[in-house]
Length: 60
Image (cartoon, rainbow, N blue to C red; front, side, top):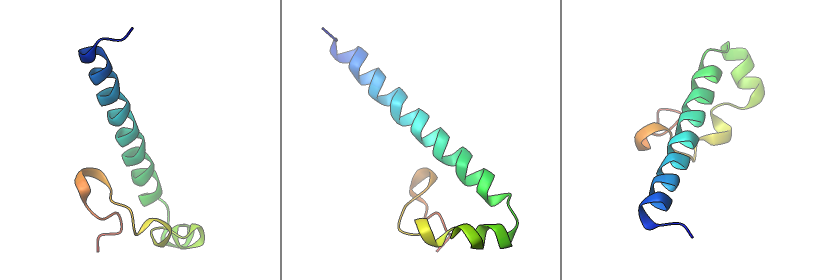
């Protein structure tokens, strides 16, 4: 049986890891050349999503 503080901490850690992974991915893609980003559809493929702290990923 999981206690409330432990489950709360686990959910927080999971969200933190997911956010860290997303930011790391966004930074890696941002380092690619514009031609490669265009080929993979970045940022058009994710323009509806928000990035770190709720900012729009593609800067719009």
